[in-house]
Length: 490
Image (cartoon, rainbow, N blue to C red; front, side):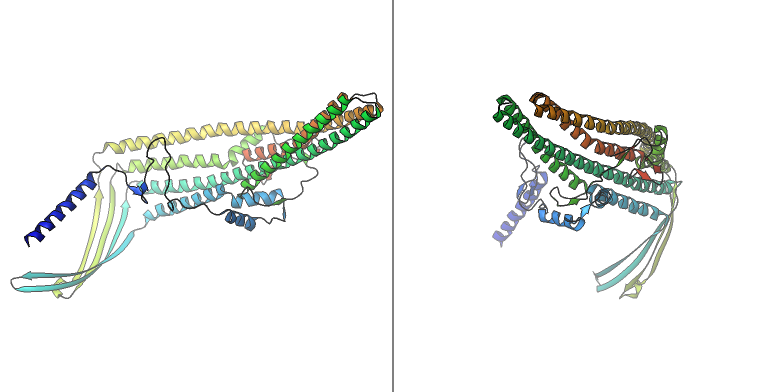
């Protein structure tokens, strides 16, 4: 017995010391048997197997792409933007945040209603005395009610702040839609521009190949030197290098377009043929009109105006903490027991008054809330200036793009005639290979600029539409451009 008691005493002492050591230890815990932090500041943390969820398989991402896009159905720009608005993670995030804000507003609005809870306890006990032992079994269901009667605007301020936050998140979602639409349109136009550059590069390669064949024939006939052949070979090699670069750029911008649609970069899709001609024209409205329209339509500016209201509501909440609050409460329950003396109905009704007396933090909270109102107003003023600058810049960028589109047509026509003349002179033996190469390089540059000009104009139009607060170039608020006599069809 003594040995057993001594052993139990030792075990108990060991357990106590272990618990004490664990409580005083500053060692970091482990994660699945591995350190929970990097061993040193210069080493990475190596997560144990199974701690970090695996990345979804690539096939799953492609399955999403197949559900959204048919690999064989050609997509027009409107369809591409629609896919992006439905699939892009940015819109998914902003929509989820908007729904969370709406639910938070609903939770805050519930403060106008009483809260009712129910509970029940089941107990069994035994009391022993000189008279013997008594067993008692009880079941005690109970209902509790609580309601805030009056608090000098704190509850109303909380509800107003939650409502304003929900509206701001809704408007932020609208701004996200516009941002995603602009990103998608810009990616589409960039891809089309690179395809135009690729076509121009192919024409340049074909022309350079023809010139090389001609130079070789003339050299064999004795009317041209080997220098002409070498120069033609150099031009062809450079043209092929430019073609390879253009092919890589097409693939890169295609991946960017897929990502803008919310698809994997390697997702298969087809684009509908781009229109042969679009009306390139400056905006019909004045820049002052468009700035005024942007101040009225921009959802991000509307969101920050609502955030001012949210900050003002928070001031009401902070001030109400310095004032009394009146609450009503109560509970009712009944005890069921095997002993009649413990059975019966119980109830309580309370009317409580909370009277703040001294707390320096409350006044500081009011000051902080009032400062947040001023900060929100300053952010709104700053954004208002930025919106005006954005519209002004986008307006004249579109003007410039319109004029450049017209100029590139003139440039291409002039370069084409110059190349034709240089080629004819070279074939007639009165022109040099240098003159021909110079003219053809000018023609290649003109083709490239002409291929890019209309897509640059389209991108500028999309940017102006976005900065004004539209999802597209024309809405119910009025179109941005028109096919007047100043426009040019491309």
